Image (cartoon, rainbow, N blue to C red; front, top):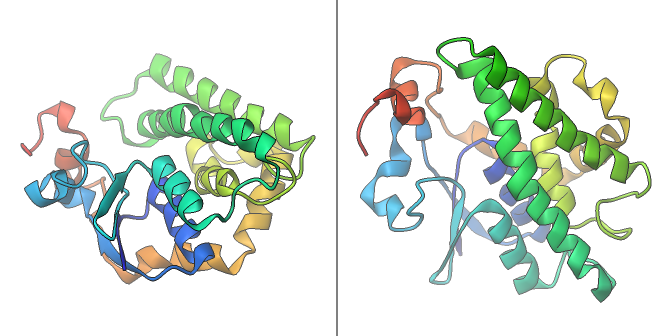
Length: 227
């Protein structure tokens, strides 16, 4: 059985969606970042970068959400493009989510909601880049039903996990700028596997990053608790 180390943030949620879509048996193991569980020696042996998600699959350890998506899709031969020529676009969009959507969204959220002091330049910078990246997705989806080819793939799962947070990332009314992305979001959200993936975190209690303990562990650059 796959051991799935997770919390309720977007990157673990995309893996939860794939696990549910595949119907693979897995053991969810919560990692409470707000209490510093990601820095425990046992977890650092799984992911030295102290991030979730990670999986252990029959002794094989994989960390980083997009690496896990690709690993599981290739292991099972599912949720990959039908046309082999689409493997290049699959990798391109998967890396676009990994290197652009995720990091810029995360920084936009930090400076909008969690920074201990207002930094107008940083807020403007990351809001602009997050909005630009979602605009790239929206323009692509104006011409295509899904992100790669004409079939539902792991890229759509990766996009969905972040896109469902668009109003939190960019503010109320942000969906008005991304109607095509909203269509994909709604289509994926309507899948039974998506409901199961979102419900997973409700089975566990996670400390929020907004209290003093959560801030110490989540924002260690402020001089928080040691690992």
